[in-house]
Length: 145
Image: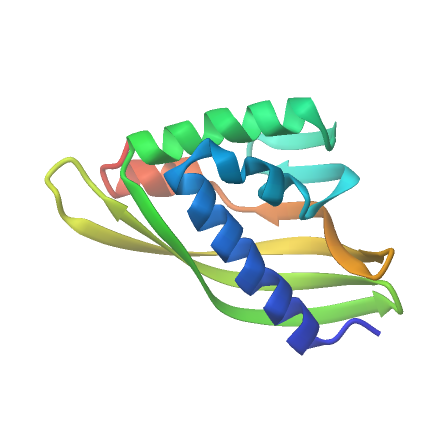
């Protein structure tokens, strides 16, 4: 069974890789290694399915460039809850806090939740899907876009 301590450790590593990728594109391979060979993303903008590989890394590269341009500084994992499906699958609800610096040089912290679909594959946890809210609306609300 996948347990909370294992998932919390996974998302601590996820946050580290994410923060490294905010500093440099060199960390994108580490971020990509967190994902399964295929995945599904559900946002207010729609449902997207994709595959891990060069295309995902290019999408992440553009995404991190956008985050840097709007003042993203650090992502912190505040809390994790886990709902197991079976021995090797679960939903992890992750409470994130992102630090951003707006155009007026004010530091803004935005709290948000993402639900991740996780699987244990070859002894390692991997993300095979996520469900998130409207981050673009939050960025606009705080003057980051």
